[in-house]
Every structure is written in structure tokens, then in C-alpha cells.
Amino acid sequence: MPRPRLTEEEINAMRDATLEAAFNILQEQGPEGLSIRAIADRMGVSHMMLYSYFENREEIIAALRNYARLHHVARHKEALDRAQEGAAEEVMREALEGYVQFAHERPQAFLFIWSGRRWGGHPHATPREGERHTCPPHRPAYADRLRHSGGIHQELSFLERLIELGIEQGTFVERDPTIAALMTTSMIIGPLLISQMLGLSSKENMRRLESEAVETTMRYLTGNTGND
Image (tube, one colour):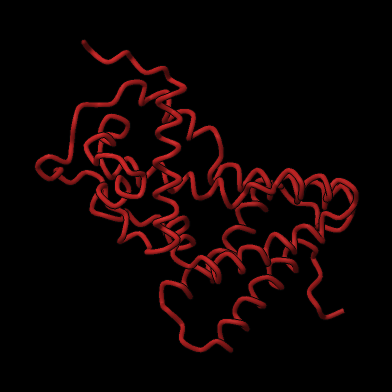
């Protein structure tokens, strides 16, 4: 007797469980530990079962990058509620310092999220024998759900809204909020990412770099050059 067809909710739940297991491995072992077998072992299922929910490892990696970002932005609503009460500048500083803390505490996840590196090979490379299977059911719908649920777009929207509130409250220079959000992301993430990729050995230099990145970004937003 054939198995009953899974509902879309059941399929999404299994995919979410797969990403949770993969995220835990990412934080413990880094991207190099993310194999289909390792994820399946962590879940206690057959590795072949995962091919019923994801086409291959590359699809898991792509979905995981967005899933990891969602974990990072989970507190945005609470932060925006505080910002709306007149604390936009304070909340922005905390957000920038949060990037620094994240890079310190979870360097593997930080690099994975922001580097854009295709861990595990080129996205258009020919799959190894046995790696690619039939396309799982409802995969486009699941991909759309992940794409619209957060990730870098939610991160930018959060910063954009903070900047809008700061402008309204008179603490930030009036700028195009969308452009300012992109600049803010670049100014804080860029130095942290490069320092992680280069593996700067001096803790003192790292602290100086991180402090300068936060202060430079805040000066950009507030228009305070520090020379007054």
C-alpha cells in the first residue's frame, strides 16, 4: 500500500527540522561539517529521506543561510517598539554592537551568513552520483515561503525603519532611508567580515576595528563628526 501523501504543512515542518539540525551543526563545526549524512544523523533519520524534502545539499545550504539570518533578526519587533518610544539612536547603537557580538560568539555562522560563499562547490557544478534526486513535492512553495519570511531583506527593512524613526526624532540626519540602510549594513558588516576572513590575530586590533566600525557608522547616521 502506497504511503499517504504528506500535507504541505508536514513537508514544511520536516524541512524546518532539517534546517534546525543543520544550523546547530553550523554553529558547532562550521560549514565544512554540513553534509547530508551529518544532518540526517543529527535528526536520527536516513540520509536518503532528506532527498524527499530537498533536491540536494546545495538547496539545504541556500535555505540555511536565510534560516540563520532569521535567528539573528528574531528580536527586531521588540527593538522597534523601543525605538518608537523615542530611543531610535540607542536601539541603533545596540543593533550595531549586536553585529559585533554575533561575529565574536558565532564566527562560523557569521561568515556563513554574510560571506556569500557557496560552501560545498559551485552552484552550477555537475552533481556527484547519487546526490541529485527527483524534485521534492511543493518545493517552489517552500522556497517562496523562505524567501519572503526574512533574511537580508528583513535585516535591511529593520535598519531602514530604525533610520526613519531616528530622522523623525531628530537624532539622525535626513537621508534616503533605503540608501542609508544599505550604507549602514556595509559600514558595520564590511570590516567585521574582512577581519574574520583574514583571521586578524591581534585582539587589540580587533577591538579597535570593531569600535571604529560602530562609531563611524553612528557618525554617518547622526552627522556628528566628533569635532564639535
